[in-house]
Image 1 (tube, rainbow, N blue to C red):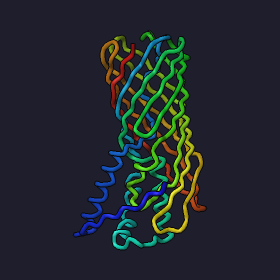
Image 2 (spheres, rainbow, N blue to C red):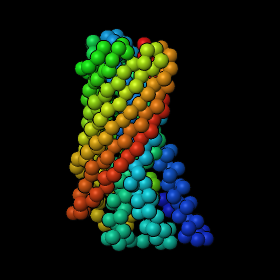
Image 3 (tube, one colour):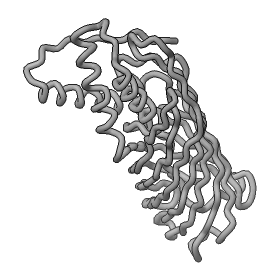
Length: 289
């Protein structure tokens, strides 16, 4: 459903003050909305024993190093024009800037999200589980092909996961004059996890990760005649490293994920490069029994 534009009139003392206020408001909105793509892994290489359980809770903070400032800058000048004149019609170049910002938010928006996980051991060397975040639901299965998980050596596992993204509004609200008619995003995630157990004290893990994402967006810019549509596939390639420290069943988790978004989607006949580096630090707790 199309959302009506929101116009906020604030006396402007200077361009610098308004830029700072708008940037702060945009960052706060994104942080509140939560928009992580679920790039964190948040689990060790060792699979659960048959009948075992894993419960986890944490927070992921997605930081797109090359996109955040571009998104805010793209919205700032155009929104200034709408504030002065609610009937303002953006130029073709301004519409392109808004489209680029929309794609950046859809694929690599900054923000924090809560991450909840529940896993179960279904067979020796195989477990599976579900994860719920502010913006997505994720299910995966993990097979351990290396090691025994008893701390005697290194372990290795491969996971295959699918994520369905739920957000279609909040993450785009930083662009005040963009109406989203339809949005879809689906991820296929394949991490290769290596690690070892440190006795009763915890776990170490890390490895490479690949994510294939399908996206589709139908959007309308205020006072622009056409609905802009784009869909396609993009790739995330990178790696992660994590540690869990505690005692026996309960451990605190710290993890760092760094991914390179490879994305050159086409919108309105233009190829747009919205790729770049994404950094995702994560903190949480897990219990395994």
